[in-house]
Amino acid sequence: MPLDLSFLETCSEKVQNKIRNIIDQGELDAYIKDLYPEIHNISTDKALFAYAQEIRKKYMRKAPPAHKVVFDDGDDNVYNGLGDNINELILTDNGHKIKNVIRISSLFKSAPLELFHMVLVHELAHLKERDHSKNFFRLCQHMDDDYEQHEFDLHLFLISKGY
Ligand SMILES: [Zn+2]
Image 1: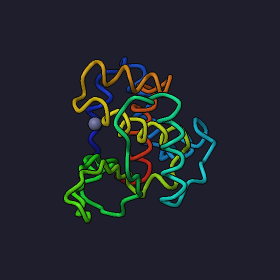
Image 2: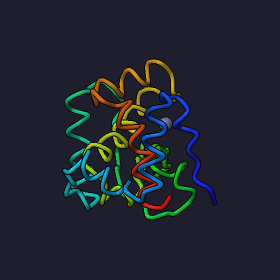
Image 3: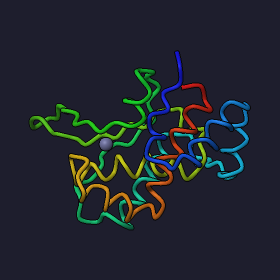
């Protein structure tokens, strides 16, 4: 399957050529490692939940809580399954209870810290803003100064991992 590079269309021709060149030369992996040398060490659901809670406490005190934040091994279409935000209906002794569950694709266990952070920030922002509205992206940028750049580099990271 040919690579989908349509996300490059927002860039200048110069940047597009640079990226295409890096991909053609098989140097994308090294390029990403160079940009993002720091790999995080969050690999358990417990650590993931704690990390998400930290971000929430810092930036989104008034937003609805995330009851569960977990890594997900499901390998559905990766572009739709990077992260997910679902309401889980939980049966309790005194009825039903809705829980907000965030799932982060397991592939981010071995992602650069900044890109892992960006995906998590995206899902956390959905607790407050359902749609990809202006307010949504403002909130994302509030939690990640370089959100847009990280979103762009996320494409490159996925390509480098063979997605
Ligand atoms: Zn989204």
